[in-house]
Image (cartoon, rainbow, N blue to C red):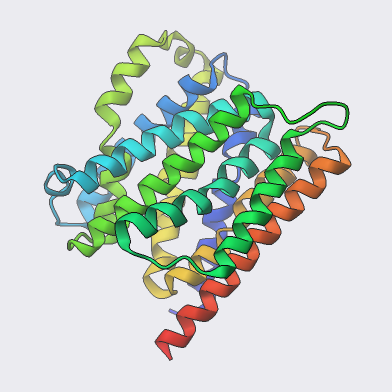
Length: 295
C-alpha cells in the first residue's frame, strides 16, 4: 500500500470525527448532550467489539481488568459525555476547539507523570498558545472571563481524552495491540453507559431523530472512523497520524459556521486561530522528532 492511501484514510477519519457535533445539531434529537454521549458510547463500543473480535485474537477482558484498561474505559466515557455537554452549551465550533485544544495539555502532564515523558520548551509554548486561545474563545467583548458549564465540560472532555490516550499507551507497552487497546477503551464502559442510559429517560431514542442520532454517532464517527484511523496508523508513524488528525477541530469549526450558521466574533476567531496554531506546531515538531529517531 502506498503512503498516499493510509494518509487518505486518516484524513477521512479526521473528517468523520469532526462531524459529531454538527450531526447532533442537524438531526436535532430531543436529548441532552449527556444522553447523546452515553448513546454514542453504547453503539460505538458494541460495534467496535463485534468488529475487533473478527480482527483480533487478544483477550479484551485480560486488559480491561488492568488499571490501565479501567482508566482507559473511564476516560473514554468521561470524554463522550462531557464533549456533547460542552457542544450543547457552547456550540459546535467553540465546544470542539476547547475540548481538543485542552487535550494535549492534559496529555502532556499525564505522560510526564505515568510514562516519564519529557516536557520540552516547545510543549510549554504550545500550552501557552492554547490557554490564551481558550481565553479568547470564552471571553465575550463586553464581559470578563466566564467559567461556565460549557467551558468545564469542554475541559472535562480534554481530560477524558488525555486519560484514554495515556492509559491506552500504557496497555500497548504491556503487550496489547492497538486494536485491542482501542476496544477496551470504547467497549469497556458500555455496561456503565447502559445503566446511565436507562436512568436518563431513554424514550428519546425511540423517535426517528433520536435513533438516527445514536446510530450515526456510534457507527460513523466512532466505529467506522476508528477503523480508518487504524488502517492509517498501521503504515504511517504515530506522529504523522497525530498531525493529520488536527484536521478534526478545523472540520468541526467549519461545519459549525457553514452548516449551522454559527457566528464567531473576531475575538473568538482569533482564539480558534491560536489554538490551531499551537496544535499545528506541536504536530509538526513531534513529526520531526520522530523522523530523526527513525532515520
